[in-house]
Image (cartoon, rainbow, N blue to C red; front, side, top):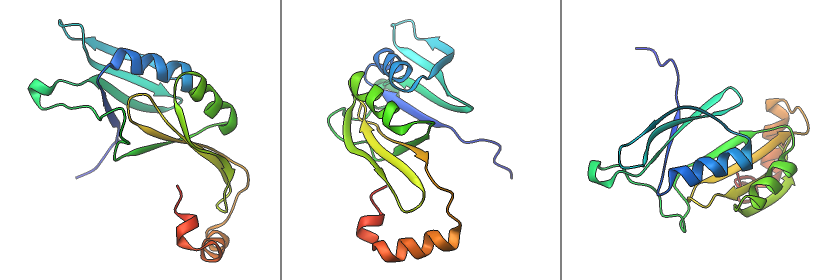
Length: 151
């Protein structure tokens, strides 16, 4: 038994609006799209660089539900980008809510978080320093788990 790939599959109460947000905020590119005869998006592929994320509208009649936009979804997606500050600003301008401003972290990344209008939280980060695992563990031990587990 071999896993060849894994994909995040997001659901939204308004997948067309979510698709527009992801394009504007994160530069996602639309791939294959299947529209339901009712007008809902049955499936759309979003390309974030080499990473594929799938999205659809909620179809509660088939047991497919979307998160409450006012409540954080139980999953967070981390985008590793060229400039976290710029992408966080773009996400906020597109209608996202910054939940954690960009900060430099002990593990060599500058990152922040934004909650999109559909309830999904995104960590946006870029590398600021290469940190080997032993040094990362040393720094982690010094920070304490409460502070270190912000991501």
